[in-house]
Length: 89
Image 1 (tube, helix red, strand yellow):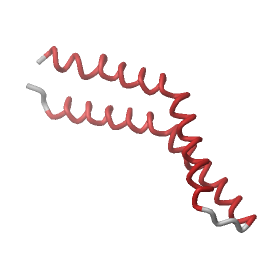
Image 2 (cartoon, one colour; image 1 turned 135 degrees about the vertical axis):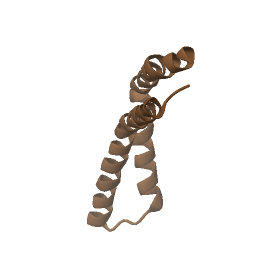
Image 3 (cartoon, one colour; image 1 turned 180 degrees about the horizontal axis):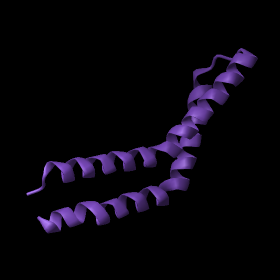
Image 4 (cartoon, one colour; image 1 turned 120 degrees about the vertical axis):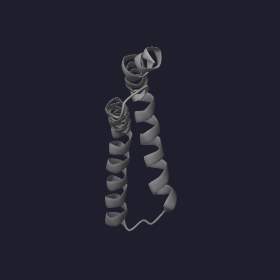
């Protein structure tokens, strides 16, 4: 049976992996949102699709570019942490 220390350590590492994986997408969404917001404030254009489309495109591009990193991070976490816990009992 798994004791509490191993459980909480594995949970902490899993949450850290989730943070690391989400940082590129969230950073690009933040930068795109600030950029579009500044552009809208400077030009007084208040179009809803102007905020949605550039952010969506930036997120999709970054997601596509970082898919390998995300997959590798998750696979290594499962191979190094989860699978030994399952096999070990």
